[in-house]
Length: 162
Ligand SMILES: C[S@@+](CC[C@H](N)C(=O)[O-])C[C@H]1O[C@@H](n2cnc3c(N)ncnc32)[C@H](O)[C@@H]1O
Image (tube, rainbow, N blue to C red; front, top):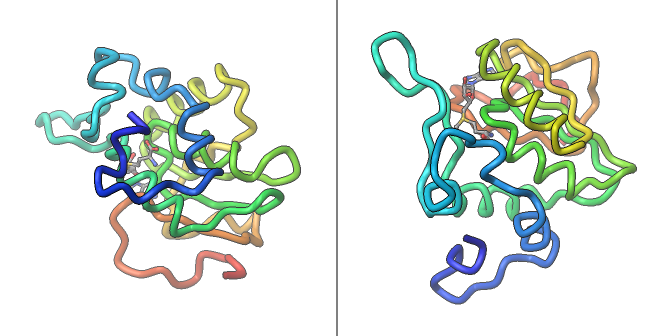
């Protein structure tokens, strides 16, 4: 999966490359085949009563690009809006290392609960909060990095420092 991320030949940074090789994506999308789990596409994990997708694991190339842009360093305090499967939070936990912290917020309770279970099964030190990311997580602020992996109208007032 990681080898296929940059067909143009541009390399991932060492940290993002190592994190994506270390964190098993299939743990976060347990209902699909390994081929799908490690394929190039997003994987829908939850749908509403009408069958409309409400949560997914983003495409690996999107995840990698966002992590590169975020420039996470060891020791950072990171907030993610939109826990989804928890996969990106697990990658963030690798990037911040034992001296950093990752908080992720998810407004769908069933999705939050599944993410929490997958993350704790892997031993990833991530705090999964059930709530609306639009309000931020003031109890855990401040943050060195905030990443929004959900649709957003605005990025003001999340309680971050950058
Ligand atoms: C594309 S998925 C996130 C993918 C996730 N980062 C991962 O690694 O699997 C978007 C998620 O954001 C959640 N979401 C959307 N708006 C939100 C909000 N205002 N607050 C919290 N979660 C939100 C959705 O319920 C959905 O689970």
